[in-house]
Length: 115
Length: 115
Image 1 (cartoon, each protein chain N blue to C red):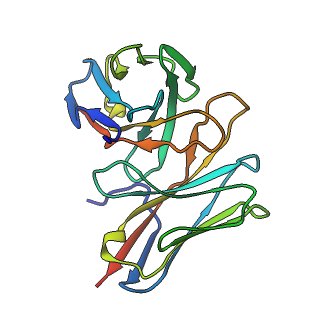
Image 2: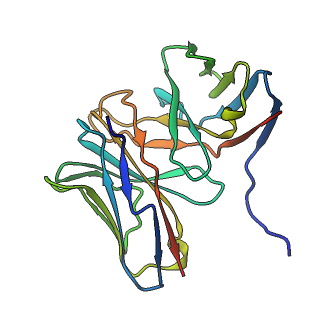
Image 3: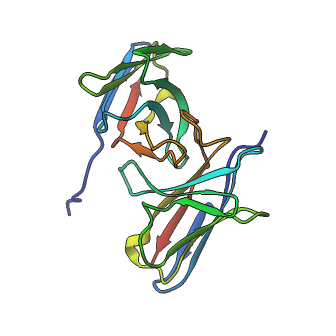
């Protein structure tokens, strides 16, 4: 029979192309954002982070863009490789000064790299 | 430098039994966070602990769930009288500090299946 449930947004790209994964966050008071990569059966792996006083940050093959006006975050992966296939989560981090810094995760995007 | 370690990686329990999940943070980290992940969903914060202290348990169910991080040894997430709805992946993360923009590093998770 059919399975009923939530399905992750998916993005399929050709190997070597650039990938752009988007995320809308919820709390305008969030001051720190992180992108995690999660491969099947594994824990989230830190990719890149950005503070709220920045609008762009670059790493190795990855760039994160932050638009606080519309509460939007994006992850750009250059020259996507098969090893990039995974679920990508954005997470926002906020909390009162001196208190816990719990992460709030988005729902994730499944990236599939096609040969 | 070993990362966050969790055991067991897989745990099967029958309804009504107890589940104990263990987490050893990264070397030099004294802050531990527990998250729960249902299939095809993002991680949901449960609890944040420092050595011998629970700092924030706002994400913990009020009944049957408890967590500790003793002075010596790993952090323990304990679920009493498990029910099928407890089936999920439970991830532990650790950070060096709880300051602003402190990165949390995740372990491989414990996958709990309740029969």
